Length: 184
Image 1 (cartoon, rainbow, N blue to C red):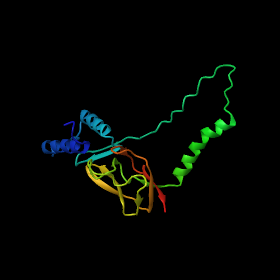
Image 2 (spheres, one colour):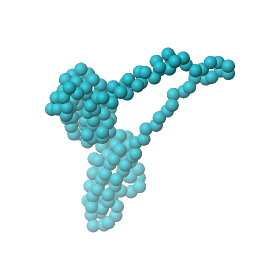
Image 3 (cartoon, rainbow, N blue to C red):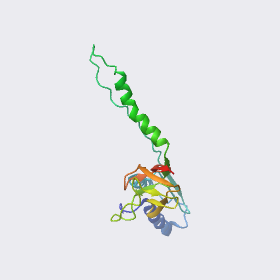
Image 4 (cartoon, rainbow, N blue to C red):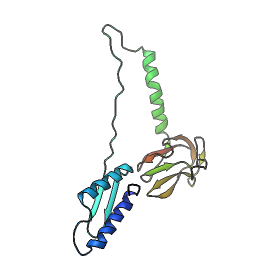
């Protein structure tokens, strides 16, 4: 039963209770079943899950937070000169500034749903697009699988794919950038 999806497990649990306690107002889940359901939802990477039947409504939601970890600074030895020269300082900050400006100028194709990102229609097929591919608004660029449904994502713009932000098979969130397109 651990191989089933959270939604399937919830349906099974709800059906079992419906057949035995249809006339009562007893809740459809006990605390152990709720914990097991929460573990399944967490295991499959869902951020939101909702189940409802005639006896109970359950909504599980997980807030995703990102944590910034500052890079470690080198140890300072007393008496050692630690300030970089002007050339070193400009060299260190220049590439970061350029990539931020470059990404900001790109049109982002974002995920319209939470799911799993796939670059090709099947594992043995070539990707829909690669860096350097030209796209039109109707061009299918990838698939996002959600609840066993394969959703084709279209470019919705004309241009050239210059950046792919997500690796094949990775989970994606709603609104997460998938591709960067240089509009033409």
